[in-house]
Length: 159
Image: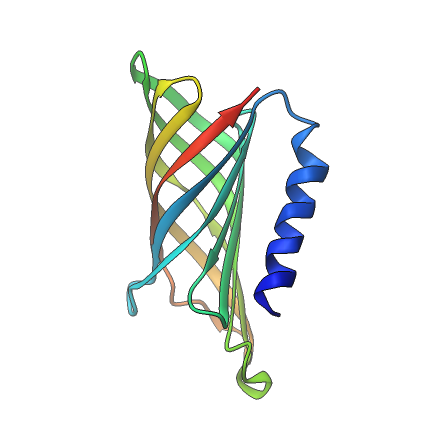
């Protein structure tokens, strides 16, 4: 998958879903994943009504990560503009896109635990850790050894 297609898909998703929510955020983040291999990456994050979050990461040009967090178990203010949260979500990873014989695909259940600071309504700074458990489907079925990850980023909210 080349970068143009990847970013075109993101743009289509933003345009088609942004209008359905009263509060829409878009931002950037840095990420790390894995306990065995800590791999830094950067990506795009989208938020809808501060309840549903979508993350896309690119680690080089042949490794993509994505996640969809859809349940806020806890979203509690620590102080007026600083919040603690615990969410539930699903994630996926696709790598070795340049080598179809060694293509890898995995999916996981994840529980993001983090803090979010909104000094003004427009801007949110966030940091989260991501314990997760999953299954790798390609090239063989096995428990995925990526147990932990995290993100630090900023989102700009509209609405």
